[in-house]
Image (cartoon, rainbow, N blue to C red; front, top):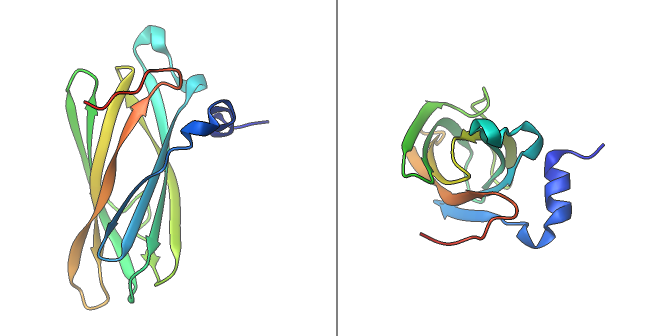
Length: 147
């Protein structure tokens, strides 16, 4: 049985969209997709998932300590989410290694934008922020536009 993600990318392979940003040798790539089967448009509930890949291209290990997300829906309403780690973890990512996870976002509109940052800690205790690239949440058949 295919997952929502597999169905989505099979229908729209040209939209295999990966958003990327690199900060201090840490590359963050995000790929969002719409969860049609979990959404309830008639109730104003649109659900997206996103897959994140964090690759440590620096010379030292880093630990993901916390996250910050800013989620803006199509009406300009903004929600901020902060918390420790991601999906219940605070992974240590060694040089050359990649950490991957998936999560989701509900919206009350048919589209939106997410952007954020991770707080990372080096072995010496110094902390720095890593950019999570802005990415759009669009219905699979929606016309895309940059606002």
